[in-house]
Amino acid sequence: MSGICEGRVVIVTGAGNGIGRAHALAFAAEGAKVVVNDLGGARDGTGASAGPAEAVVAEIVAAGGEAVANTSDISDFAGAKALIDQAIETFGRLDVLVNNAGILRDRMLTNMSEAEWDAVIKVHLKGTFAPAHHAAAYWRGLAKAGEEVTGRIINTSSPSGIFGNIGQTNYGAAKAGIAGFTIIAAQELGRYGVTVNAIAPTALTRLTEDLAGFADDAEAAAKIAEQLAPEHISPLVVWLGSTASADVTGRVFSVTGSSISVAEGWSNGPTVDKGARWSPAELTDVIPDLVAKAAGNADMSGTRH
Image (cartoon, rainbow, N blue to C red; front, top):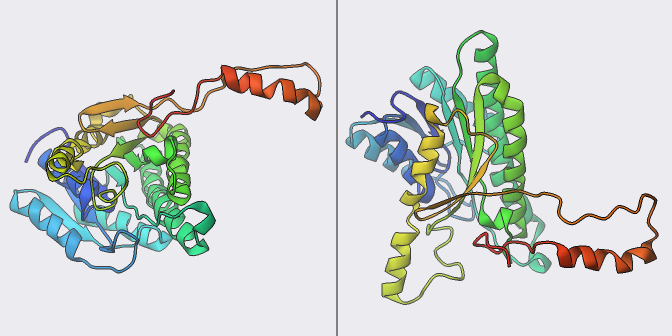
């Protein structure tokens, strides 16, 4: 296989199903050698099986590509290191890390258990930090040894994280954290030849298929399934993993079907400065006016009203 990522070595976490599977297949189709990581658990993170990762590897090999399976728990620091080490030991190098693995344990805040909070934060947030840490350390070592590095980290945020969604305080907090992580990691790793970006995708997968907003009517559901197929997300991720993306870093991209947007992050809006310390009572006439002048928060589509 040849393409925009020919010869590059790519890790995709959570690549046994859904968006991760689409990423792995798309990278392989563009000539990359792929480490397919998946713990093989249910969408809530319970259970484990090598089957999903091995099935994706089999697809890639059958199409003439190169891939190996990995079932490490990427939210475990040692497991994440084992993943990075496997890529280097198997293919001699690492060029791209796609942090995609995730779980859902949705619950309204008043009903959410500590375990439901901890599990989601661990898989998404620590599961992004741990592989990124070990990959970054590897690339830093190469750069300090004088080798050219074209490392790429592509993280997975979510509209829930950058825009908000009811019932997902755990998931949204983790995904917002990933967006912040992306911006800071990009600032830190640029000196080593590494770019860091993130996507906030909307796609129909086993994580989202029963969430509100998707049609029950069979014909409408089929249309939505095509419009929101995970395969629509992967072209941007593959491009971000290529050497062509060298000048793009520290950005979060919203991706839905064929639509790609650059998400514009927090910035200061209307401001008032008294020039001296405020008393709480004074703010009664100030803060409502500031809020009235400010743009509203965006909805899940990224639209401000």
